[in-house]
Length: 263
Image (cartoon, rainbow, N blue to C red; front, side, top):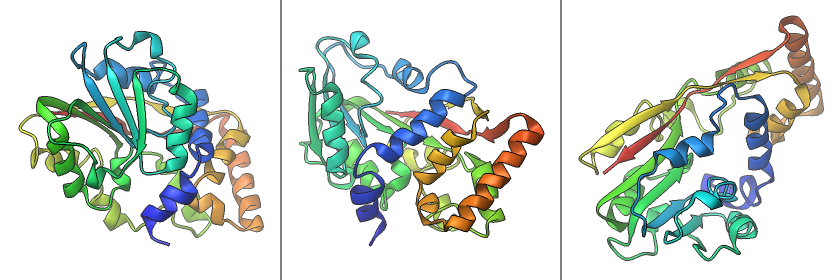
């Protein structure tokens, strides 16, 4: 099974795996400025904007902020996974400002210059052909339109990699050299400047200070690595984490995330 099929049908076939990860960040992030609020506060669009979010997931960016969205905005929520599109519709489908479809950012089913704003929130690192994806974003944006792309840096959740290595595992589902060519904070500006004249980066300072084991294990269980662990490896991981929490009183995990704005 190729990576895209796995993402569409298994990892993100429903929102269950993503929700487990969101919950860990919600409970234990040290930054009290919520991520989705922070992202929306960076988005500058006309009062009558037409907006596209690609890789929308379960509409996490929007569902807690409906009251602050301008009445005349028209927002298309698109995701490669039909399951995610259904989840998004379940959350905000009654709001007439939203429309929904399953779509691949590498071949967007829209005419040229269709949108004032395009948003890609933590999804471009899943895209096999970044150049094609960015050309498509540029194509569907109106002249002067803005693209907002959130992603992580190479040190994001570094401790998860360390725990995996102690179990003799590799945290990533693709090798590190491939990861470095994905869309991340360290190379995002270079990739964007091939398609946009202006690029601005804003980092989101944060970390996880985890004081309970079960939500952390639920996060790990939602990932490809967690889903492949044997029973003895799970026990070894639980012991490792319980010992660290007992010893330190908190498990600290680095986060490295930010947002690019391009036009």
